[in-house]
Structure formats: structure tokens, C-alpha cells
Length: 85
Image (cartoon, helix red, strand yellow):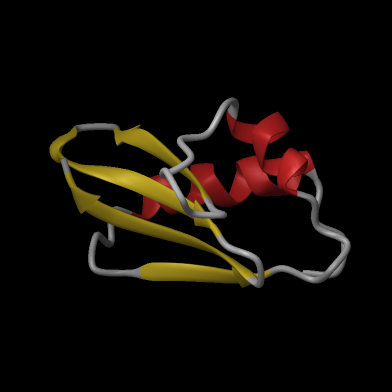
């Protein structure tokens, strides 16, 4: 994606939640223009693991109490994946 903005990030999350293919992961390569603040604007405050330079968000999956959507932001990519609740 060339021009990643807040609305695009929100749309990726919403579309991923609707697919219900729980064995799929999605990685979005971050170019150097992508700021972590875009993800904070899109999703709110993140969980920052102690001693790590990454941000993590967890979202409830509609109609599934066993899985949550985890969004992990690393330096070079963003990863969307379903994990056990």
C-alpha cells in the first residue's frame, strides 16, 4: 500500500474481522512514511510489552468467544492474526 492512512488501517481491520478465516494471517509492509501514531489514531492506545519496541492491539471477534484479533506493529511490517482468547 502506497498511501496508508487511518481510514485504510481501520478498513483492513474491519475486513479481516469479517472474513472469519481464523487460520489466515495478514502482513502489511510498512514503508518508512508509516508512523505508529496512525495505528494509535485508528485503534486507540496499544499494549506495549515491557522491553520491546512494538505495539499490540487486541479486538473481540464478533460471534466468536474463542478467538481475538491481534494486531502487532513492528518496525518493518504490521501483522493481523487471530489468536486464542
